[in-house]
Length: 197
Image (cartoon, rainbow, N blue to C red; front, side, top):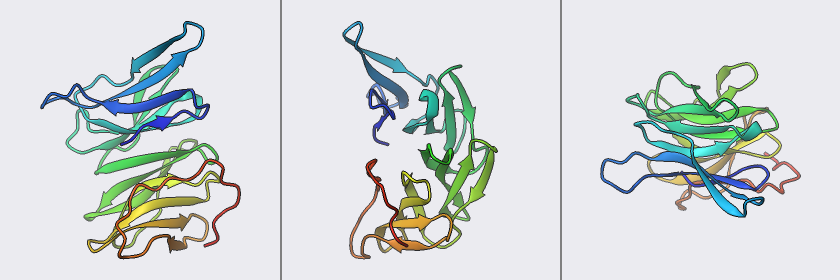
């Protein structure tokens, strides 16, 4: 649910609410106008839902999680050129989107039979593909810069670990031990070589 910097580092997208009990979180974009020498704050969403986890895509587009006009959260795509919102997932509990510029896919978590599994949505083909099928919740995923790996928080009721899944081989390694309580992984943008799985 944290802030997300644009690929050029000049804008930041984040969620905020007005602080009242019934307030809903909205997505905002902050940038500094160098010509006018002043900050600019734009509200991206204007709805009755909780809008969280903004993530930048190409062309200043955003992907985020929303529950506007719905009983369950879904993945939403904001088109910066038209200012239109597109609902990417139509059913089920979906959260934690992350965009990869290399493969133009969005990874997200979806509840399947009570377990959060990882799915990938291809922006080119408009197809969804399930990545994981095993027990244990997989959430807060993020792409490696090369687009071949997904890091995520894995929880099974006894522990919360950081894991890395290789999309080609479907192999998984755990980066943290079972006695550690870890979540919210992030890849370094300076990453040059893949982690060996």
